[in-house]
Amino acid sequence: MKDNAPRFGMVAGEASGDLLAGLLLAGLRARWPELTAQGIGGPRMAAQGFEPWWPLDKLSVFGYVDALWNLRELLSIRKQLGDRLLRAKPDVFIGIDAPDFNFGLEQRLREGGTKTVHFVCPSIWAWRAERVEKIKRSADHVLCLFPFEPELLNRHGIAASYVGHPLADAIPLTPPKAEARAALAFGEQALVVALLPGSRRSEIAYIAEPLLKAAVLMQQARPELRFVMPVAPGLRELIAPLVATHAPALDLALLDGRSHEALAACDVCLVASGTATLEAALFKRPMVIAYRMHALNWWRMKGRNYQPWIGLPNVLAREFLVPELIQDACTPQALAREGLAWLDDPARYARVQACFEEQHRTLRCNTALKASDAIAQVIDGL
Image (cartoon, rainbow, N blue to C red; front, side):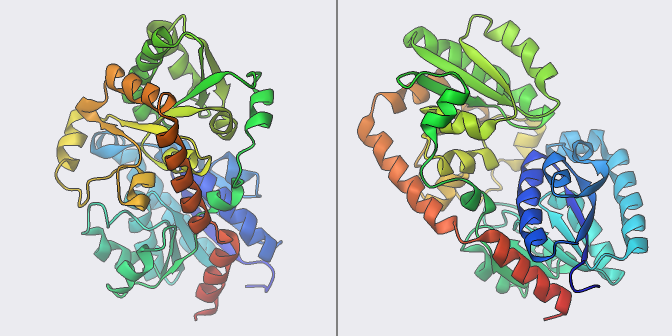
């Protein structure tokens, strides 16, 4: 490796991974301006000079059913990618989340002499503790987003560092509400609800409809409400027909991307469980967390969780700061009821915003610098 030009292999498997990897690459490039990075990724990574050999949407599946439908293609891509990386011999391979795809790839690369880093500790503290052994075989080092994770991994002999969350650095402590509203043509006094149904096709299929129907009910109760829905790249053709079918008269602005503007502008949001819940918390926006999935996926997951919370803001708080409506509980009526409740309880609204600010300060610790320090130590064999 040239001192100023390490070579990285990287894989991100969905929009949230692309977001994290793009922020990480920006920090790595600040340290090593001439670095090269190749593998599987999306537009945010490409904006940092990443060379995608496959687009990330090839890996954007959710749950056992989706994975089974796409298993042959996924295994073929992983085999081809592994072959190519073993020939290229990067200084480090960094797997960004996507553990079901990345762990097998990381193990193969590690056995072939490539150092491996996994960015984002899998939620072994929430469910699937058996992944600990996979992590141990696959990763030389794990970069952890949350402060309680390194100690848990260290107990199992896995090297890990707490690096904070890059979104906590990227999102300002005081959200730019006025600027976002001006950009989206919302008035200063408007009551705005953001709808975030997820960034994967399978999520849209299960979650968009109840969110749209809930929005219709909310507008019937409060006609002054306005709605905004950021749409992940490539998903507008899925969303638009659902809006036309389930909410044709809704005062709704569909955005191509721009989720951070939508969160900054809104007063409350209905949001699919995942990284977007943390983003909403960092923007200090009260939320209702929603999730639905294929019945087989739900059956496999049900009863395997180790704690009562699913949403990241609740996990960090160790309490139900915000409502979680999962699977059968994720009805339009319940979503609308819980969404409106935030607008009718100023004291509760203020309390949750204060909790979110505390979480933001905890997670804001210059992730790019800490992560690049840890990766430099892996490269140097420390």
